[in-house]
Length: 163
Image (cartoon, rainbow, N blue to C red; front, side, top):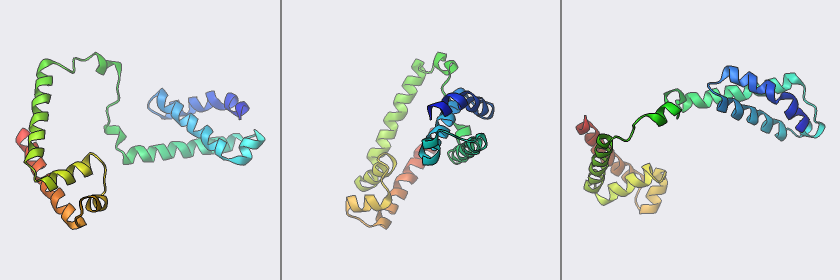
């Protein structure tokens, strides 16, 4: 496998760099190809890999990444760059505005009924499914849904009031 890695690493990096947004993605994709090759017992044992198979795997990895990015709306994400690091993101006005917004958010959470607050926090922050919340709180799934809808409606009003 080491022979394959040294022979094809540069080629795969170039292949992915031309088709991806940055060097980090190219490195990740290249590593993913070699991981897939390691999982293929016949290739890992023989240390031989036809170049056509290697690039078939590479195209497959690229296609899979593209599908994942589309589902996760990666094109809408901001990536960290040096430009963002140099910006004055924490001006006093922003800090005060954020602190006030956070305080108001906590007030809205406190205004919810205890059950609605618990359901909202368990679902949004702890990642519980409605069925897990129902079991945890000793209520039906429909009751969990009802409390979640109340909490979401209150949060919607909170967000609309901010505008």
